[in-house]
Length: 119
Image (cartoon, rainbow, N blue to C red):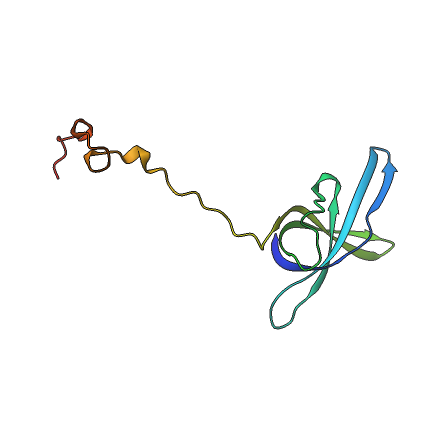
């Protein structure tokens, strides 16, 4: 799933050591746009934490998974981000390389023209 939202709050970084070694988790609060904005707590684990992007006020494109689990008859849901990109920076489109379309107009070389074409 994907979501674009503004980062409103950066919660304290959580760290620890488990059976698989050290871990770190960053929870963030984002707010959606629209007539009825919603606040969502999203967890970011391990090397996916990029402190340069995680500045309050930044708009983010967040790819995430939802996971629910039951414990003692109650259900708990996690929102885990697996990719976060800045939504504020416009994508830079590379212009097509015109060098592959060389002909007599831009090279002055008439030998590059294929005269076998019917048009």
